[in-house]
Every structure is written in structure tokens, then in C-alpha cells.
Length: 581
Ligand code: DGT
Ligand code: CA
Ligand code: ZN
Image (cartoon, rainbow, N blue to C red; front, side, top):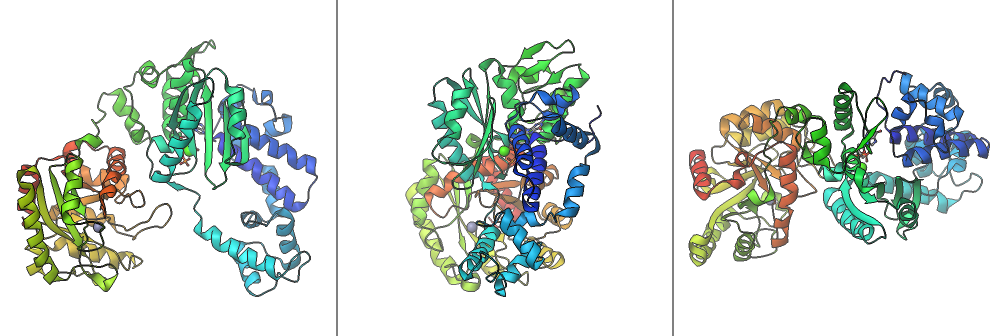
């Protein structure tokens, strides 16, 4: 059997769930619908790749997958399409499925709106509700009409993905719970979380145990579980009351390495790894490596697993199929920057603008983290949005900085800087006479982020042309998990950074992570210095450095490429070359 597109079990399950929902709207017979739902559940819980099982002709051995479903899976795997679903979508407009995401709207209501008012989309439904056309339908009223409008508004706000900070705190809590369960020898994070992707869809947690079934029972019956999406012996997934999704995978300890590799992904990395194994006549699964005679060699640790395929262990942050497998084979994986390499914080706020504590307290916080330098960079007074500093405040602030310097002496280098707004017309918030008195200048966009590409790019280029600017902060202004940032033309930003010598910021806030890994990697490859800034507004803010470092790692950066790892002398030297120190 030839497989054209790679289908994950989740994608296959989504297809059958889609069929089941369309049939519900169609008011099909319950037992037919149930068969598709069962297929979706068992695919979600399946430990092995359905595509691999299909190649071996073993799909029908999976509980919940009969001959008819197996044929549909094979059709999807070989042709990338499913005739049955296509015909179904001719009968029931698939956009109706969007209506099911509204709380209180099930297939019956969706069918009602469709058949009586010819509504097929969320937009049409919202319009009808606004115009009061729903309330007179059978089983509806003014109240339920209002509930639908509220539900649509809430949908728009709710994101399907989590920020890294939310995902990690959830993961720590669940790992603790899992580790306390009987028979659990090890429990670790996997999936996009372990790769530190900027947002996380569902949490993947992997477990070494010889006693999986009772563990899975306990997991799906945990009091925080709202809905079981799939339950199997080696894999179960649930939706929690707050909407987050968790997937738990198990293997006996001898196969833990294989499982951890598999569940960490990414999918593209796994595909690349499987190809590598295939070239050696092996098949790689979440249990281990199987040779052509069918002998399984289990993989207990990831290091062993990679070594068995002739590779150095690959840090999870690199597992995105961006050249890491070749680099691991050729022994040229980078020595990635680590949190301990960070020795300074160059973007912080105090009570002089919108920070929570005094300059002295921020300096103490930096010292407590073992840093040898800190920059105090309060906001300029743009548009009065935050309590920014007027040019005359900057001069008064300098006196306080001097006093704090006097107090701490050689212990720490204190730079007096500012975060200056790039105004909507591209000019900076302070005149050059003020900028030239500062030790370090950060330029950033805060307002009018929706300007057209040409205009917003020109704004940034203008700021980069000012010789006093040292750092371009959170360049796009995006807000995670789902508010996109400015539409910058990076093709112009990179060369401008290069010629100006301005450093590109990785803003470490888990709500920003801006610039992102892809842009940072490219910038660093051009020799542009990268600086990781927490933009702390209080001492605890400095703890977010770890998220910024994760972006740098995903961008393949080594410590010397990141300004924060430098010595004081190197920092001052760089600033002097920039002309502002
Ligand atoms: P997410 O949850 O959207 O943030 O992204 P991931 O990377 O956590 O993806 P997810 O949760 O769909 O799957 C977790 C890992 O499991 C993924 O990184 C790779 C692996 N995986 C899932 N399904 C398949 C599959 O069908 N084939 C292979 N080779 N790997 C898969
Ligand atoms: Ca995931
Ligand atoms: Zn800031």
C-alpha cells in the first residue's frame, strides 16, 4: 500500500468525528453515528500509527475499527480523500459544524436553523440572532437567542491553544499527580510543550509503567475531566473543565525512550526519523525499532534511540525538521544557549513609569539572580497610555540611578536607559538631545500595529536609522496565544538591522515571545546580535527569562550570539560602537 500524505491518528479521528457530526445534523440513525464516534475514539487512543497498521493490513484488529471503517482509513491514506465524506458534505453544508462549537447548540438546533432559516454559517446565525429571527423558532425564545449571541462572542475570544506558562503550570500539576499513582515509574512532558513551541495545543505526558490499565481508568475519572476524547491501554486523552486537553501515553520502562521520542515529535521530525530507520531496514515506533524479521529492539532511553540510528541526541527544541537530523548525523548540532549562560537583564521598568518597584529593588532582583549588569529602561511618555517619562523626568531619574550606582559599586553595572516609543508617524518619542544622554535605548512599537505592511515597516526602518537606538524590542507586538502582530516586511528589516548594528530582542514574556524562533534564527545567521529581555515590571518578571531562552534554543543559538551572555566589557564595547554609551 502506498501512502501519499502522512496522516496522524488525530487527523484520522477528526475525519470520523466530522462524519459523525454531519450525520447527527442529518438526523441519521444512532447506531450508524455511534460506529464513527467509536472509530474516532479508538484512533485517538491508539498507541501505534494507524498508517503503519494499515501497511501491515492489521487495522481491523483494532477494537472499534471494522471492515467498513478500515476501508475508509485506507482510502484516506492512499488517495488523501474520502468519497463518502465528500458526498455527505454535498448533502449537509460542513460550515454547519461551526455552529456546534457554540455552547447550547447541538446538531438538532443546527439542523433547525439550517432547515427553517437556511442558515449555514456562524456569521449568518449571528446576524439572524441580532435581528431577532431565532426567537420565534420552535423551542427557542428571547433568552436562548441572547445565549447564542453571547456564545458566539465567547467563541471569538477563546483560543484553542495555551500559552507556555499556562501549559507548564498545568503540566507540573498533572505530572505530580501522575507520579503519585501506583505503578508509575516515570512521568515526563512531551509534545509541543517539551519542544517549547510558543503555544501548546494539547498537553502530551508520557509515562513508564507496567500497569497501564488502572492508571488510564484513574486518569479519565479524574475530577477535573469534563469529557473523555479517547481511552485505550497505552493512550488516553481528555478535555478538562477549563477546556484544556491532555493526552497521556504509556509504555513499560524498557520502551520509555521510544515512547518519549515519539510523543515529543514534532510530527515532521518523526517522519524524518522514520525515513532514516527505513533506510536501515528498520521500522521505528513508540515501542522501539523492529527489523525486517519482526524482531523488536526496545528503546529504554532517548540517547540509546538516537544512537541506534547513528545520531547524537537531539535537544527537543530542535525537533522541528529544520535540518537537525542531518546535523545530528554529521556531528554539528549547535551547543545551545542555556538559562545559566544569562548574565544580565537589559529591559526593565521601575516606578518611574509603570513598574511596581523602585530602581534599587530591581537592581537587587538582578543581583539575586547572579547578574552582573542591568538596564533600567522606563517608558517614554507616548500618548499617555502608560505613566511614561517626560524628557525632563529622564534627567531627574539619572540622579537616582547615580545614587543607586553609588550604593552597589562594583557589584553590578547599572545602565540608565529608556524604552522609547516609535510613534505612528515613525518618529521617536524623545529628541536626540535626550537619547544621546542615555546609556542604552530600546525602540518599540506599541500603538497602530494594524497599519499596512509598507507603512509599519517604514516606521521601524526609521527608528533603526537613529544612531542612538540599540535594541529593537518585541518587533511585531503580537500577543499570544492568538493575537497576530504587525505585518512587517522582514526582507527590509534584516538588512536594516545588519547595517545599523541594532540588536533584535526576544521578548521573554510568554504572551509575546517576539521576535519568534524563525526570525531570530535568520537574524542571528546574518550576524545580528540577539538580546533576550524579560521586560520585567517587577522582580518576579525576571523569572520569565526561561521562556526567552527557549526561543533562542529553538532558533539554534549558541551563547555568544546572545548579548546577555557577554561580559560587562563586551557589553560596554558594543554600546560604545553603537555610539550611545
Ligand atoms: P500541539 O499539541 O498542536 O501543540 O502540537 P504537538 O506537537 O504536541 O502535536 P500533537 O499533540 O498532535 O502530537 C504529539 C506528538 O505525537 C507529536 O509531536 C508527534 C507525535 N504524533 C502524533 N501523531 C502522530 C502520528 O500519526 N505519526 C507520528 N509519526 N507522530 C505522531
Ligand atoms: Ca500536543
Ligand atoms: Zn518594556
